Amino acid sequence: MQKLGKQTIKFDTPPTITEVASIVGPKEANGPLAKYFDQCLEDEFWGEKTWEKSESKIIKETVNLAISKSGIPNNDIEYCFAGDLLNQCISSSFGLRGLNIPFLGIFGACSTFVEGLSLGAIIIEACAKHVLCAASSHFCSAEKQFRFPLELGNQRPPTSQWTVTGAGAAVLSKTGNGPFITHITSGKIIDMGIKDSNNMGAAMAPAALDTLLCHFNDTGRSPSYYDVILTGDLGHVGKEILTELALEKGYNIKSNYNDCGVLIFDKEKQDTHAGGSGCGCCATVFSGYFFKQFKERKIKRILLIATGALMNSTSSQQGESIPGIAHAVSIEL
Amino acid sequence: MKPLDSKKDYQKYVEQKSPNSPIFKNCFNAFWVGGLICTIGQIIMNICKSKGFSVEISGTIVSIILIGISAFLTSLNIFNKIGKFAGAGSLIPITGFANSIVSPSMEYKSEGYIMGVGGKMFTVAGPVLVFGISTSIIIGLIYMIFNTQSITLV
Image (cartoon, each protein chain N blue to C red):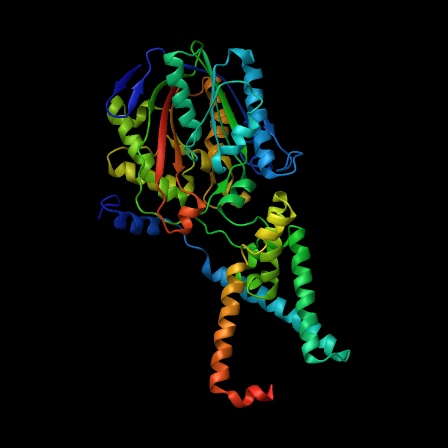
């Protein structure tokens, strides 16, 4: 692998995304992308007693599904990168404790899935044959940790986003038929002083812009190189902001840019306000919808930029602003 | 002005870009639902009085019934939908107070009855209790200082 510019790595033998899997909750199952997911759950508990246990089960079953679909024996997978939103990442570590694969827990807020893909690709280029990457989130456990009890009768502002219940997992391999991870651009922490935790899209958009510009600078590519430029969970508000800011910097991304948080829900019918968010958002939308588009050769090049808001409920209560982060992977056939 | 010049400029830009809450619609719904809840309370009050209960006892019965209904609807996953629709209309009356105690109790039941339900029951209502009681003490003191005669009457 070689370093391009300041923040980008180009792989000499790009790792293949061999197989993916996605499991989503009932709300996502009523959304526009329902038919692309591997499994849709009928209720948030999935037979478990707590939401935390349910989230652990979702990531565990998603990982098992990805491994069994790939046909690679469990023993041949050398590393697992996974993370989620709950304190100390308990969903992934509890869910994957029976996996028996060296486990590297990661936290990048909602950018975790792409952070996992980036690290997985690096370790494959360095030494491994097969690596597993996964991320999950759960609406109920996230609300409990970050906001109010679910049954509390309050109103959500129009800029608030809806945490996706679901998990996505990907098996990366040294050799295969693609799609390939050709470049990764790891983002810097960018904080433009937004304090409203009900407006995460606006807090994360500057980080997404920074990573986007950096990727174009480092690689010499332009927006038109990609069939789709896809952000993780900027939602409707963040999407509009990023489009405008990019245009101001001289990059017109209007025609091929979209956001997983915008795609996963029907804003009008599902009452999800500014769109979906959470680690599970870009993990399920990529694993569900876009991977199939690759397999059917409908798209050939994606720049996937997962965005994360690096805050917790204590920092919000103490009046801190929200630092944003964005990691990009270039996935090509 | 370019949005990314400074943090202040960006915050101003974000404010312009972010959709506002539909204030008129929210106020209207809060007004009629809040009014409806109070009317229901008044109807119960009148029935109690017609059955021969005193005003104080009737008021207590109204509170008990409204709290009971609100707690029950919270447990059925209905009150949060009313709250989403009516906002302050269902939050400000005693129904909102009941909801703010029952909802964390349900949420934290998974952490056990002592530290979960018991420990977290007042996480939402706590500030209302602390500042409500504090305010009533201050008002009480003012009343005592400036109106000592009527204190003895009560």
